Length: 234
Image (tube, rainbow, N blue to C red; front, side):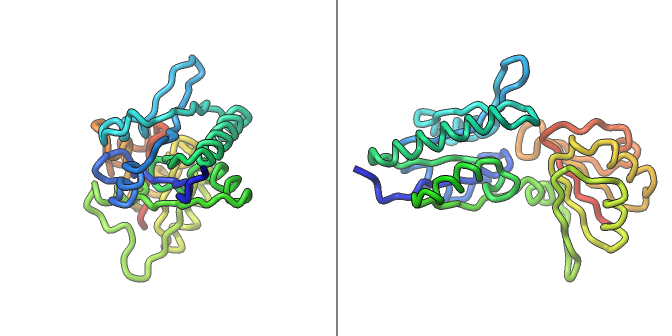
């Protein structure tokens, strides 16, 4: 018998288990099955920050991981999303309460929107539960006000040129760069050309490996890993 509950998309926050919202935690408590993404490297190894969060919160018994390759070719990732879509639809029809989790906020640069959109197009009830995105947790970690009063903010997905960064900052717009590993050279060039701006760099926020630096001397040479964020203020 089909459950009356929607399929819930729960945002886990940036990495620290305590940063999940109470509503998200309650949704996990009622779930019969929690679909959790894991990244797969080219050498076949997999890792999942989302799974680590769920383990710490005590939900490992109801988790099913789906593996996503770290590849710009999205063919295999789309196959994985399709499989989760089919499984979640089937399990819900059997009366199960289903949750699909995402790190950060499920509505901010989260690829599980593919599953959400397909379910909604099929008329299946879905619910998205908000979470704390990495850049918000980063600002709190550094004790900074990301924006104040009438200041503007733009969030970029890593695909950005140095000129675009310069233009935003000249317009007195605070810049947040997600997926920082995709624009290493562009950011280095901006730091070298404009040392007058404030560059706040974060990696692995919410984990034991979290790191913060605002040193231009260090950042102009640093290689940025996947889980990194930068906030640039004028």
